[in-house]
Image (cartoon, rainbow, N blue to C red; front, top):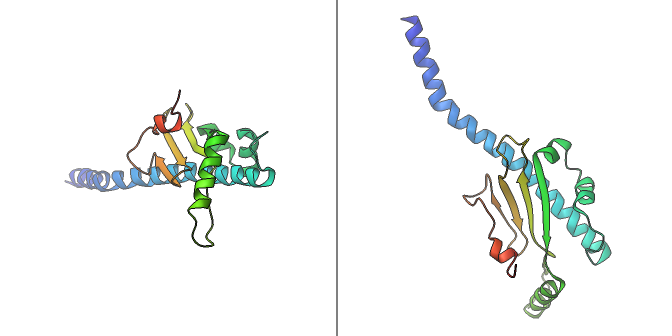
Length: 158
C-alpha cells in the first residue's frame, strides 16, 4: 500500500514537475545565449562608432571585449554578417530622408548576429539563435519557432 502511494506520488511529481523543469532549462539556456548576442551587438556597435568603419573588426576581439564567459564560448560559435557598404549607406540616407523630427536614426551595419550551438552544447550541435539588425529582433531557440534565419535575405546574391 505504501509502495503504491509512493509510486503514485512520484508519477504525479514527474507529470507536473518535468515540463516545468524543461521550460526552466529552455529559458535559462535561451537567456544565456541572448545575453551573449546582446553583448556582442553592443561591442560591434561600439567599434563602429569609435572607428567609423568595420575595418579591422574581429569577432574574437569583440567576444573578449564583451566579456562572454568561457562556458558560453565553449557552447556557442558566434558570427556576424556585415552589410555591404553600398546597402548600409543607402539605408542610412533613406532613414535620414524620412526623418520628420529630432528622433534617433538607427541603421545597423550588420545584417545578422548568429549563435550556433557547438558539439559541447546540451541543446545539440547546430541549434541557432540570432539577432536581425534591420528589424531589431531576436529569433531562434527559446524565442520563437524559427530554426533557421531567412538565408535569402541575408545573402540575396550568393
